[in-house]
Length: 176
Image (tube, rainbow, N blue to C red; front, side, top):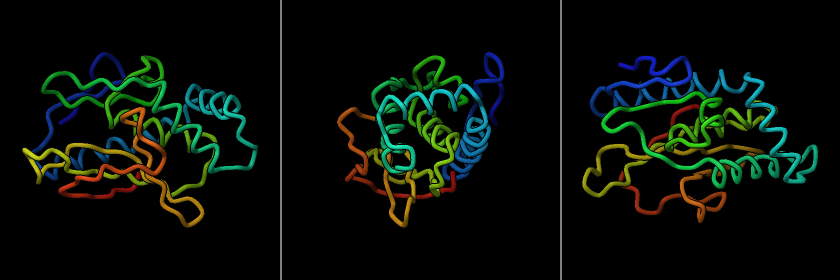
């Protein structure tokens, strides 16, 4: 069950076990991304990022790439509160300039939607921890744009657009 933590911009709580907890988290991420796409601070950031990247006005792939690079390079990865699953609104992630994989994935979807990029977004969860190969341990975004899937995992600065973690034990997709 999630609860508000330090105001309306952060949720935290204890997850249900297993896939049920993952489903709960993805549902909340979807809601945060949808609301974040309508937040003017998120939209202003997206417009600024795309303009600074020199992407052309109707080049949606270039605009999506610019947003991915922004999240990857300018939003620091930090872990959740110890032993507490924590979700931030996209605006909160922008304000603090940091978040974990679920915060950064939620932000990336909200940024793209805020400027009308018509991709079909999915949250991809993977089990990447060899100690718990049945448990999902990471999430990132996959966008379907112009009939092509584009993985967007901004976890590491070395991750290029399209990169997917090669050693996955389990994979699942959920609408974003």
